[in-house]
Amino acid sequence: LKISESHYGTKLAVAQGAGSKYPRHVDNSGTTSDDFDLRKITFIYYLNPGWNKENGGEIRIWDINQEDVYFDTYPDGDRILAFWSDECVHEVLANE
Image (cartoon, rainbow, N blue to C red; front, side, top):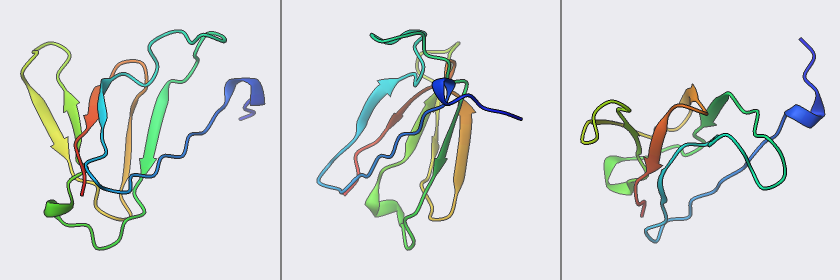
């Protein structure tokens, strides 16, 4: 499998607490100001050993068919989360 550098990108996000969060969104909304966004899959790898529920930072994944239905995924250390970049509506809840 050959991946063109013009169609591949990475993003590093570090949450340092103090209530930081990401609002509800889709990673690939279809276009960017520069060019067409071709991302299809988002992978998140959690590097936070010792995480506990009081730390927050859960990913909330929203049901696209029902406005008030969601599922929370906890950011346990050494966990990988994968989802469709252009379909999965999600947010990152506040972390401490």
